[in-house]
Length: 163
Image (cartoon, rainbow, N blue to C red):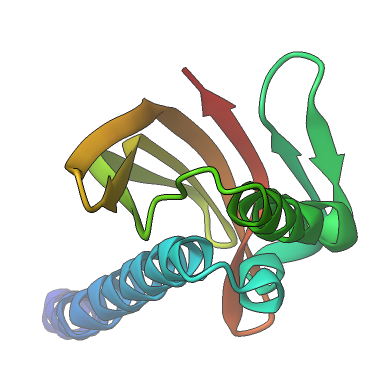
C-alpha cells in the first residue's frame, strides 16, 4: 500500500511539474498579446487611424476622459480620432501652426490578471508634439484600464484617462 501511495504521489508531482510551464507560457502569451494591443493603441492614435483605434476596444467599451466626458461604444470612441483629424484640418486651413509629429508614450506600466479573462492595466502617459521648433510634452497623466479577453483577442473594455 505504501509503495502504491508513493507512485501516486510521484505521478501527481510529475503532472504538476509538467503543467507549471504550460500555465506560465499561457500567462506570458496573454501578457504579450496585451502588450501588442497597447502598442496598436498608441500607433493608431499617433497615425490618426480611426478604424484601427476603435478596433482595440470592445463593442461596449467606455472611455472616460474626465468626470463629464465619457465615450460609449466603438463609434463614439472612433470619434476621438475623427475629431482630432477635423481639428487639425481646421487649424491648417486657418494658417495656424500644427505639430507635424505626435507621439504617445506609456511608461511605468503594471498589469494584473484578476481572472483568466480580465486584466487591470495602469500606466503613465505623455503626449509629445513636434514641429520645426522642436519637441514638447503637450500633456500627461495616467491610464486605468480594464482589459478583457474576447475569444482569442484581448480588448480594452474600460479606459480612464486621468491627469
